[in-house]
Length: 151
Image (cartoon, rainbow, N blue to C red; front, side, top):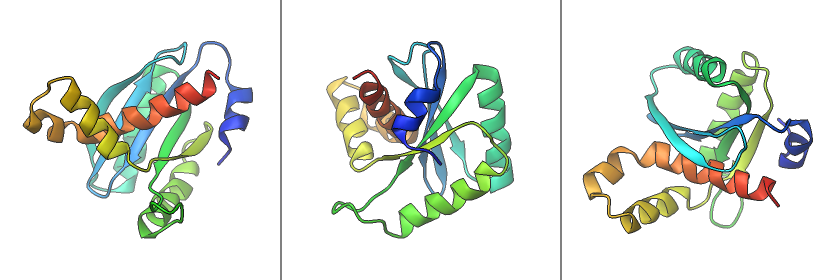
C-alpha cells in the first residue's frame, strides 16, 4: 500500500479512482470522473468470497480505466485500529496479490453516518438510503480523497 501523497505523484491528469467501503456482507463501490472532481455511487457487491470479489474488482477496473483504489479503513473513534480495520487490511493483502494498481487506505470514521445524513438532506426516503448505504459510504470516502487531492 502507498500513502495518499505517493498516489498523488503517480496519477496523471486524466485518471479515475475507485472508492471501496469494505463491509463483511456488502462492499460499497464508488467511482470518480477522470478529472477526479466528483465521486459517484457505482454499485454494492454482495460478498460471497474473496475470489469473486477480486474478479469483480478487476472487471470494474478494466471497464473504467481505474488507476488507483481507495479503501476505507474503519478506525475506532480514538484513531486506533480494531478488529474491523485488521480484517480490511487482511483482505487487502490478498487483493494486492491479484490487483497491481496503487491501493491507499483512507480513514473512514463516520462515513456511514455522513452518507446517511447527506442523503437525508437530499430528501431520499429511508428505505432507499438504507439500501444504498454501502455505495454511498464508498462515495463519501472517495470524495474525501478527491477533496484532499485537489488542495
